[in-house]
Amino acid sequence: MPTALLDRVAVVTVSYNSSAQLPGFLDSVAALSPRPRHVVIVDNASSDAAASQAIAAGHGAVLLRLQRNVGYGGAVNEGVRALPRDVEYVLVSNPDVSLTPDSVGILVAAADRNARAGAIGPRILNPDGTTYPSARSVPSLRTGVGHAVFGHPWPTNPWTRSYRGERATASEQRTAGWLSGSCFLVRRSAFDAVGGFDEGYFMYFEDVDLGYRLGLAGWTNLYEPSAAATHVGGLSTRTESTRMLRAHHESAIRFIRRKYSARGLAPVRWALTAGLRLRLWLLARRGS
Image (cartoon, rainbow, N blue to C red):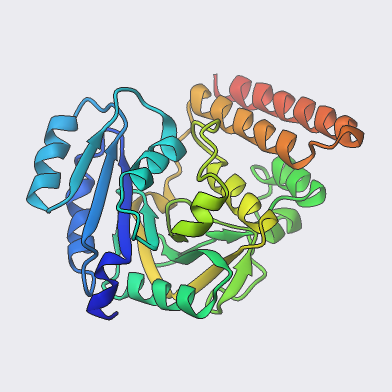
């Protein structure tokens, strides 16, 4: 990665009480070859913001403190807006990610070779070294319903496997419907052209929505597995709280209303919304 790219690339991460994860992430950013000059940590009104401020200062990063928690997508938007206008690419990442030293250089090189690539995602590794399915298709009626109905009781069902891209070769570059928001490079001009993340999503589906809108605008979402990043939270199997379940389902409903917004598709919207609300009720009741 030529030194001239230092000013072309920036890093934006979002912290919400994430001071324990920030040092490891920032150490991996510092080990990038070469290291991007601009690193912005957007703090979503955390209780540990003072600790994060000290960590940021020690790593040469800028901490942008928000007065309220605006959600992941909204915080990323704030971070991107704070960057100099000549930044061409932004690496968006969770703070519980560890980057390999050559990862950003590989992603930028892939973007430079593919002028219509709006977002470029690395291979996301779980802590045990397995590959997380981070490059997925935009859910269709068939795969979306199949995944929603059978994803929990039958994880290997064909609809979930199709939606998650598990039938594709994990080691080959390919296009996808959307890329995991846990770590991806985005072309600044493409991000700005579609208005960044939709801030109506507080959590969940903001990355699905961004990939979908990039595709509608003529950009591609490119999976580049020769670049790698490890997501510490990638194998998390913690039970979701009722609040998180509700946020996930409400975000899914928001996406459905966007994708099937035509007047003639109103019955589809109503049926899918009713099905998701029923699913939420059943899952919340089972977990209570």
